[in-house]
Amino acid sequence: MALSCGALALALGGTPFSGHALDATHMQRAAGIADKSAGCTSPHPNFGCVIARGERVVGEGFLYAQGTKCAELQAVEMSGGELCKGATAYLNLEHGDCHGDDSALSALIQVSSITSFSLT
Image (cartoon, rainbow, N blue to C red):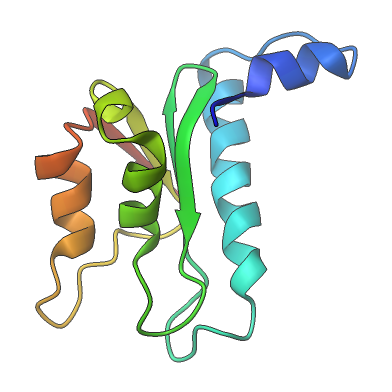
């Protein structure tokens, strides 16, 4: 399911976002979905990923428990992979590449062809 931040803004009586405001909106979404796992990911922090093409969110995910699929991979899978080409990944933390597990990094670069990243 694709979401549009601009459509939401219009529905709420605002105007579509652009530039830094759009980036900030996607970053807030990444942080917000990361908080869904509060208290469940120890010793890892809460982590969220939003993949967007302009206003349109094509994928998102969050680390919901230690040992589960990484947020980046969930976001790529939600998008179907193809919609990630040319998109931006918004991460509330640095990408999850630890202890030799490169699935998160692979999902974002090799599988998805993401062209840019935005980190808090």
